[in-house]
Amino acid sequence: MNLLPTINTPGAIQLWQWITEPLEYMHNYDRQCGDIFAVTMSGPLDRAVFISNPQSMQEVLTNDTKQYSAPGSSNQILKPFLGDRGIILLDGGEHRQRRQLLMPQFHGDKIRSYTDLICQVTRDLVQQWRVGETINVREQMQSISLSVILQAVFGLHRGERYDRIRDKLVAVLALVESPVNASFLLIPILQQDLGAWSPWGRFLRDRAELDRLLYEEIAVRKASLSENRRRDYQPEQSDILTLLIGAKDADGNGMNDVELHDELMTLLFAGHETTATAISWAIYWVNYLPEVKQKLLAELATIGTERDPLTISRLPYLNAVCSETLRIYPVGMLTFPRIATQPVCLQGYDIEPGTMIAGCIYLTHHREDLYPEPHLFKPERFLERQFSPYEFVPFGGGSRRCIGMALAQLELKLVVLELVTNCQLELTGKLPVEAVRRGVTLGPKGGIEAKVLVTKG
Image (cartoon, rainbow, N blue to C red):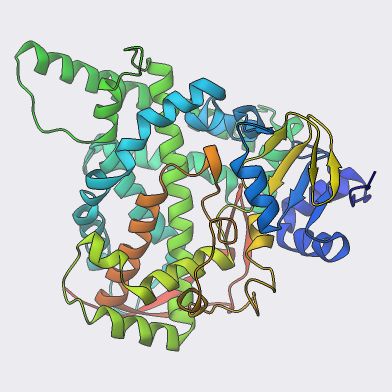
């Protein structure tokens, strides 16, 4: 029996390393153990096996209904944000049904309908900037992604209800703004309500208010739809909340208020926080490397004011820049965990049933054999070859692949396009910018500062 390489550093120390310095943690143990190893950190990943070999990633992610399961219970650290009835926390048949219900809202014509919204939101933000002012890029991109998600998901436009939900969501997400704060998710014993001035107590109160606002929005929308049906009036409503309220599964059942709430929280959290982080990194790299910006501007000049999604998706260098952004600092460091349901052999090692296996996206994206000089930002690598879905895995894979992938990619490309063509920024502050833990994601340390040099309109 081949013994799996195992990290023997005390579990509490490993957990602290994973919380505070996740990139160093992964690189250190990858060098020591290779592309498969067992971690023994205290907490939700205890005894998990980390893999980064593309062949192993493919085997685990494509057999996740046979030799491996993909239980929502493995994602329990997200429960304080999302509740337990959203798609990420569901298991088996329930998960498949919910996925089938949601998928049409994130593909095809539905995605294309968001193009004008994303472009307009970005232009509106740029028009508020003043030449000479210094902006926090991460905060500004968060404003864009949140506005897009509130309008696309809720059908909410600027106004009191929009502002209340936006402000309270930002307050809730403040819990994960730093590596130390992220420890509240990874160390459950810290989740103590010691009053409104304690971090967890403040989070619980902000979340309760956000919950109240979301349930209120669901009730308002249901009443409006009911009144429209009574009057036999069917206005053109295409926001996702309206569609979810009316959606039925194969048995003709709709979603109850708790399920609607938890799904809205999932879409707000996953579709806003992660997208804002990815866009921030893209804007950083484009402005940090002048040659990248020059090539991008030359390509974008060939399409003029064209914003057709199909045209944009076919721009080779824009696609390469966005792909390299998602490669070098993938927003999610790990795939959603799988659990071995039977004895399996992985890379020559025997894996026992019940073992948790996590694909290490960050390490896969930094393999020298796939990406020479992996710590350098080189969009050309995506022009020179095509990578398989298990070599380039920014959105995970298998039954847990990110459902909003198409929308996230479109938003990333469109916002980069709009910002590069409508303004000129100069990075300020400490450079280069480091990547740090932001909850379960990799974000820019300090948020990225930039001085506005030129704006159009």
